[in-house]
Amino acid sequence: MRIVVRGTNWIGDAVMTVPALRELRRIFPDSEIVLHTRSWAERLFRDASFVDEILTFDSTESTLKDVLEQARVLREKQFDLAILFPNSFASALTARFGGIPHRFGYSREGRRIFLTHPIKIPEWKAKRHEVYYYLNLIASVEQEFLGTQTVLESEPDSTLEVSPDRRARALQILKESGADLSRKTVAIGAGSTNSRAKRWLPERFAELNDRLQRELGANVILLGSPDEAKVSNKVMEKSVFKPIRLTGRTDLDDAVSILAEVDLLISNDMGLAHIAPATGTDTIVIFGPTNPETTRPFSPHADIIRKGVECSPCMLRDCPIDHRCMTWITTDEVFDAAAARLTNSVAAKATRN
Image 1 (cartoon, one colour):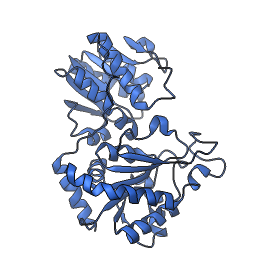
Image 2 (cartoon, helix red, strand yellow; image 1 turned 90 degrees about the horizontal axis):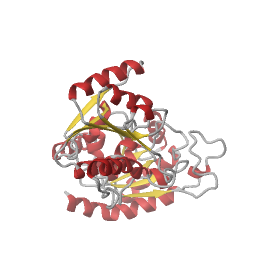
Image 3 (cartoon, one colour; image 1 turned 45 degrees about the vertical axis):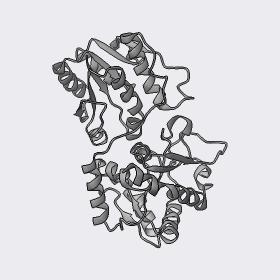
Image 4 (cartoon, helix red, strand yellow; image 1 turned 180 degrees about the horizontal axis):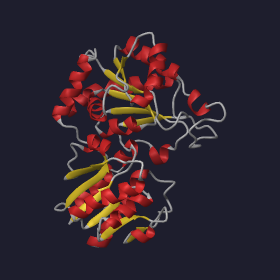
C-alpha cells in the first residue's frame, strides 16, 4: 500500500506521534509511508527511519485554497490509505478531495462524512497520555487491514534519530558560540510561545543559570524561537554569569541537533521539552497549568517538577490569580534535580555516542 499520514500542527504533538508512526512502520514493513506535514516538521523528522518521504506544505490565508492545492498533490500521488492525526475538518476534506479510498481519523469537528473509517473518541482520552490517542488510530488500521491487535501491546517508542553530520554541526555551532566543549552543557528553554502561564519566572532561570555555571562549571545556552527572544533577554539581563544566547538564532533543524548533543535541557512545558528526550538527552520540565499525565514528554530521559496546587491543571494561558503553580517552584529544587541528572548524563552520553 501507499500510505499517507497527516501530521500535527505543533512541535510537541509531532513528537508525541512518533510511537504511532513507528508502529505503523512495524505493521506495514513493505508499504510506502509518506508524512504529509507542515514544512517546519521536515527538520524534526529528517532522519526518521520510519517514514519513506516527507511531503510538506505551508498554509495561506485561504483554507479552501489550501485544501484544494493539497488535495491535488495527494491525488497525484495516488495513495491507498490516509491516517489523519489532526482532528480538523480541513484535513479530512483534503483527504476526501485527494481521492484516497481509505481514510481513518477521529470523528470530530463535524467531519465524519469525509472519513471512510470514523474512529470514536476513546473514553480515556483525558486520562491517558496523548501518545496512546495517536496509537489508537494505528490500532484501528491494524484491526481493519490485518485483523490483528498488536499495536498497544508493547511500550511506545518515542525515539528520534539525529544523523552524525547534524550532530557534528551542532558541536560546531556550540563551539563557535563560545561553549567550552570539555565542560557539561545545559540548555534552557525559558519561553513558551502559546502560553504565558507555562513560564517559570525569568529571574529563577537566571538564578539557576548562575548556579549551574558557578557551582558545576557548566556551559549554559538559551534556546527557543524568535517569539521567545524577549523572555530570554530577561534571563540574560538578570544573570550575573551570562549564558550563551541562541534563542531565535537557530532554525528548528539546528535546535534539534543541539538538543541531541547537550547534556541536559531544563525548560517549561514547550516543544523543546519533547524533542530533547526523544533524541536521548536528559530533560527536566517545569510544569504548571498543564496536565503532565497527558502531555509530559513520553520518555525515560525526562523528569518533571510541579506543585500539586488546587487549581492545577487549569489549562489557562494566563493566570488569573498569583501563578502559584510556578512561583512555588524554587531555584533550589530545579538545581538539585539538574545536578542529579548531570551526575549520570555525561557517562550515559559517552556510552551512546
